[in-house]
Length: 548
Figure (cartoon, rainbow, N blue to C red):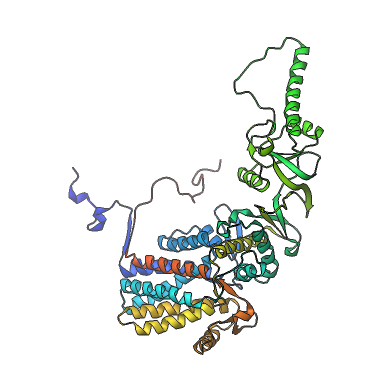
């Protein structure tokens, strides 16, 4: 029995294992948490909007990312601080739900927390701030409904003009200046694969193929798939292709059971080799007789099998990725067969043409399927470096996700900070009508909206104070749709500039940021157990050992 004297410390020290850390109270826990969150939102904030700066992030695998896409940045940063992680999760939820607006979520949550810190220093209790923030976000969603452009709830998702109108701001915030080239490509690809019921639109059906060389203006859309590999044999083009897909590879299969063959003479050895050849030939001939003229293999293609495929004029493609193989089956309507055998007519897929083309020195196989009701479209992106291509791909992803959101809810609200200033103005009026201490929190919530026009102006190198005051002046005189025109550095009516944001993107982003900010404010103690044993992941292997 250990005496009480040997127990270290008193109070909470004696209760928990040694090596733990315990932070409590306003100074230690709440303000430290707020500080960490502000650091994170400070990183993403400078990337907000079309003139946002790029970040260079090198992750733990030494991969380089050059991007202004907040979701990618925070995912690769490996944030350790528990409170800042909450913001990362809010950003990730926005990315998965809508696919755009992660930056607004994180930056706005950070701004709310900065304002909360001011209120705490004034002497408000965090729970009063939370009540005020909750009232404010509910009021915000009400006001947002008011700001929706009339008539935008009915939309034809196959009308390219309407789609591009809603997609422009999402693509421009990633690739400013390129949106007029990218939007038509993304809109075309999305409209091609849009099912009869647009609500069932699947983002996975728009693929991106990144090929080095050329410039963005060389990019194009292909109805069907682009595979980044060459055909295996010498046949490089087949029109009106009937396709057999074999998931297990095209090769002589080893028998399930182990067997030993005793061969007495050279003739027997020759016959043994011949029967193997005859067996392969029989299998390939069976496939050719079924009417197929393209074989797609999910694994290796044997040399002998390839030889007979050539003889029977079959084109051979190899797709090693299982997911790519499934997409291929979806594009062509083929059914993957496990082992090499004669396919039925209904297991064959069909494509208008399968051809090997050379794009910028890379040989790719293009599978075109122009018949209506197409299920996969590919945007072929061209650019000079890998990081440019990766960034273009993120812009296309955002465009496709925006299309998915507009298929569900096509309402639009003014962009270019017009909505935010209007929200700030109306929430301030709302706070003056409130009694009690919440009114201060609501007023600060309203001020937080100024972060958006301020950041947009700062990132574009304009004077933020002038812009915000002239925006307030315009909105006070009833021009609800006045936002910032970043190119001219002036305030203009955004319906002439055609900058619209989707209502769902904005409302989800604001909801998630208010939730994240309230979650961080609710924490008043942090108790961290001693980390589990074992070597640290970031410690160098063999550290402390001799060189040899």
